[in-house]
Image (cartoon, rainbow, N blue to C red):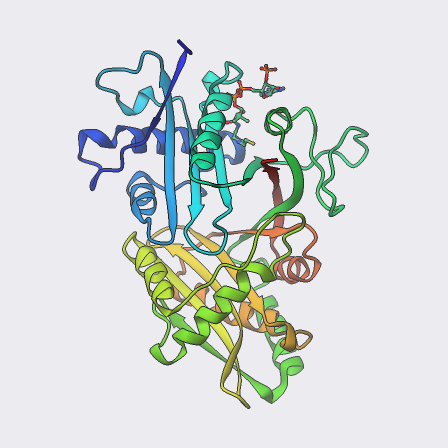
Length: 370
Ligand SMILES: CC(C)(COP(=O)(O)OP(=O)(O)OC[C@H]1O[C@@H](n2cnc3c(N)ncnc32)[C@H](O)[C@@H]1OP(=O)(O)O)[C@@H](O)C(=O)NCCC(=O)NCCS
C-alpha cells in the first residue's frame, strides 16, 4: 500500500456539510503555502469562494484531488489534507489539454505526496482523452542573473533556479519549461496621485477622436455583449503563448453572462472598461478588474487591444480609465495583483509605467503524451 491516498474532493453544496472537509483542507493548505511564499494569502480563494468556483463546471470541468495518509481516515477532517492538485479540463476549445496546480503542505514535503497527486492527475486526464498537460509553478524571486545553472524558457525571458523544489519536481516528472510569467503588484494609494492622470492625458491625445471608452460594473450592457464575447475569444490566443499548445477558446454571450454570474455570486465585483471605434461602433479593446467586495485587493485580469487597432495607446487608455474608476469605486483597495508573460514587452511597459512592481515569477511547464 502506498503511504498516501489520493481522493477526489467532494464538492457539497455548502461548507456546513461534513463532506466539505476536502475543500476546507485545500483552502487551508493553499493559504498557508501562499503566506510562506508572499507573506499574505491574497491569492488564495477563501473556502466559500473556492467551493463555488470548483462547483462551477459549466465551461471548465474541475477535478480537485486531495492527498491524505493511507489508509484514508474513516471520517476525514480539514486537517487530514496534506496536499491538493486542481485538475482543469476545458469543455470547449482546448479539449486536448489538462491544466494542473499541485500544492503540498509545507510540513509534508519530499515524501512523495506531490508525485502521487501529479500521477493521479495525469491518469485522470489521460482517461478523459487529454494529451497535453500544463503545470504551473510559483516562485517569489527569479534566479540570479549570474546563476550559470539557471533555466531559461525558449522565449529567452524569465530565469528559474534548477535547485528550486518546484523546478526540480517539474523536471523530474518530464515537464519542459515553456514560459515565464511575471507576477506584479501595484500598491495603492499611488505614490504620485497625478501619474494616472498624466498617462491618461497622453493616451487620450494619442488615441484621438476616433475612440471612446465605455465602462461597466458586473454586467456588460446587452447591446455590447456579443462583441464583448468576441473580444474574450480573441483574448484566448492574443496573449503570448510561447510553446504552450493552446488554441482559441470560443466565447459567446451566454458564456459572458455565466462568467459574470460566477463572479458576482461569489462576493466579487467586476469592473470593465472597453474602447469603441466610433466610426464602426466596434469594441476594439478592453481591460478588467475583479475585486472581492470589502477587501483590500483587486486582480487585474485580461487586457486586449485588437491587432488592427494597436499603436494608438488604447491599452493605456482603457487601463487608466479603469484604474481611476477602481480607486473611486473601491477606495479600500491597497494591492492590485497581475500576471503577464515575461516576453509581453508592450503590456509590461504599460504596467511598469503605472507603477506595478515585479514581485515574483510563474513557470509554465508542458508535457505532451507521445
Ligand atoms: C513542488 C511540490 C509540489 C513538490 O511536492 P513534494 O510532495 O515535496 O514532491 P515529491 O516528494 O513527490 O518530490 C518528487 C521529486 O521532486 C523533486 N523535489 C521535490 N522537492 C525538492 C527539493 N526541495 N529539492 C530538490 N528536489 C526536490 C525531487 O526530484 C523529488 O524526487 P526525490 O525526492 O526522489 O529526489 C511542493 O514543493 C510544493 O507544494 N511547492 C509549492 C507549490 C508549487 O510550487 N507547486 C508547483 C509544482 S510544479
